Amino acid sequence: MQRFRKTQAGFTMIEIMVVVVIVAILAAIAVPIYVEYVRSARSSEAKSVIGSIASASDMYFQSNGEWPSSVDDLEIEGELEVKQSTKNKWQFELQLDDQGGTIVATSTEEMAGGAGLIITFNRETGKYIGYGTKGEE
Image (cartoon, rainbow, N blue to C red; front, side, top):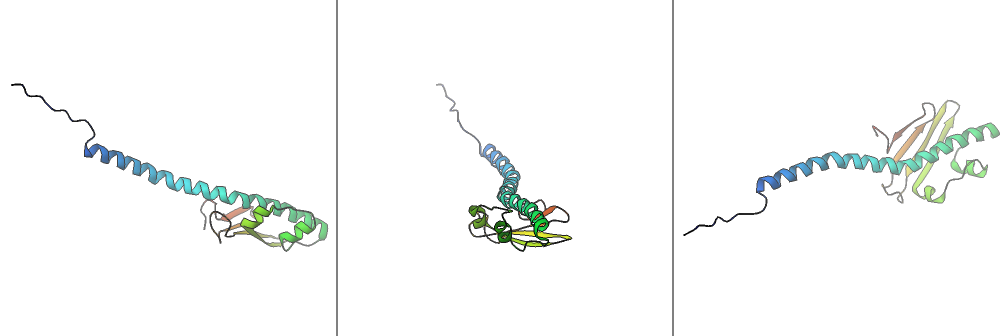
């Protein structure tokens, strides 16, 4: 009588667990990087408009001898045009003076990242702080 050995195909529990652990480690590394990338991308629109506001504010000051108090002042003078879609996502506040001042963008409910996210541009240092920046507060 001959005995046939039955071979089993498939993976052992240990092999499956090793694969699960490797996938979990890769996810733990990739997810934070992806989240930071998304924040940076969402904030880039506001940063671009803030740069335009800073330049337009300089031109406004040269023409009027005073700093603008709002984005509306810049638009009325024809120094700046902000798309309505951007205005729907971000509110801009100007606090400018001869020493530099700040331009602050605050997200609204229509921004995909949520409302209340703040990006501040310091004109004196030329740096952004807040949402979507390295070391955000």
